[in-house]
Image (cartoon, rainbow, N blue to C red; front, top):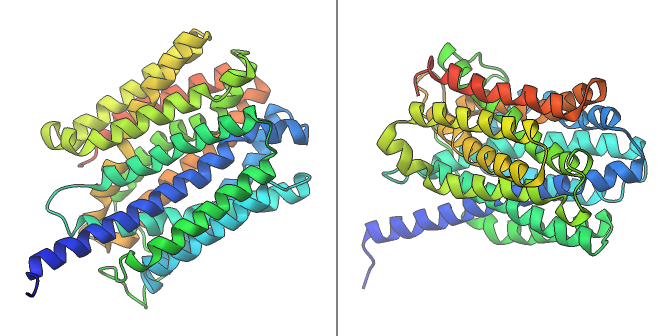
Length: 385
């Protein structure tokens, strides 16, 4: 008996969702693995907080170099080719980062890490928009929830590796092999054709004011998120001076509440509206960071990082989903414009925090990051979402 076409479509739809969800998880695991060992690599390289900020600047430098390339490649070649190549590049470079012996090796590898991050960020979110169009309900936040869940898993694995004194090289190589295996399993079910792919697409299309507003929200939100990824371990180690087994606790708490929040965002936005959810999220982020900075003791800092996780959970998925509905350019190019601005904040924020921390203190620099949460709420009140 032949299967009904709607059943076949539903089965194909689920396969696409599972494959794209797996890619989000693999990418989150890759970045979280790097972030979990930053304090160890800082100690091995013998660099100060200020110097670490300059070293971390290599990641946004790599992203900035690839800004026009990523959107153009997705528009010209399609997101499938770009995301598969980008994930492989990301994994290989992660493995190499673990064996970097000095800054002359580490900095170029971090630049390549930035290039891979930018390529995969734009292409995998374009894939998510493709899958979301196959459903009658918003599902973008659930994909980002998988990315955050992977971040939680990566942080937990990192904590175990640190406790067992496993060198970053062996740790990173193991994760890279897992990512390569996951990519091989998922590749056949990634969406093959994007809507609006244009082989004659120019390398740069100027976004309209609406997309720039969405990009500004993403920029401010991802500065806060990037601060948590790169500096939470350092903050717990140097400011709170916790036992080494608790160094990754703040990052783990942040990632767990971010992941939990993202799995409920779609329903919450449907009831309250995306704008109101984003405004509340910005206030929650600012409150959490303010608590962690004002009261630098373990219980309060954990509570603060928990609130930041909930606060940052909704902003990026809702902004990206709104960008995918743009009527002025293709979904891929609109997403490239908005996600590029956002990811610049994600990657540029941490090194700037390091520079400010070197000139003042880490508490002062994180207090300034709290202001970005307030900016999310302020900008959201002026942008149609």
